[in-house]
Image (cartoon, rainbow, N blue to C red; front, side, top):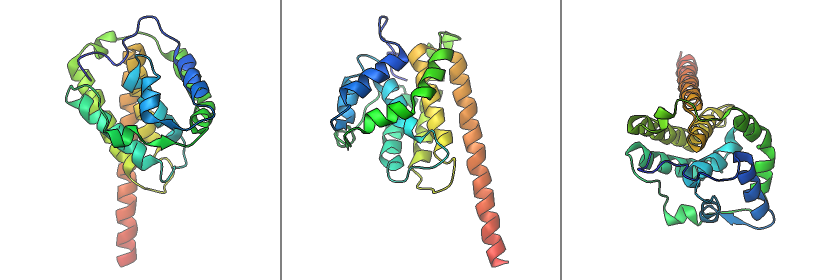
Length: 210
């Protein structure tokens, strides 16, 4: 992660309140990623990662949307993995989201946010003070973003990488090392699922040729 932690504000809205403020701000108008980022008031890219990943924490893939959002996640993760401040190209920052999209996403994700907020608290804070762990988080976010890029119409192929990003970013928001470890476990589950899919695909191809 960057030289400064992703969550830097000492007096700030709660996790869910900040997301609700974003929903209210862009309730009836299109929103660009740059505007969403500007409206996060110090919680920046971590909150943006949560926002753009939450729609994909569902068993059913969302074709079309996962590619640009996966690209944004991967680019942020790549910067974090090498210890640099997160950055996105202007083309992605200027990408316009449909009117009302943000409100719908945050409304559907409200239960997830409340559950996260209930569990999030400063624990094992050395995880977020160590550059090694910060780079590990960036690498896992990068790989998860690349997994989201894959246009696979297969259940759960979006869920595992998106949930990994949400957990890792949320852990950064509240300096929660326990949730960081849960995010790592979610990543391992996702890799295992993709490996099983790969073996299943190879087996199916061999069966056709057999």
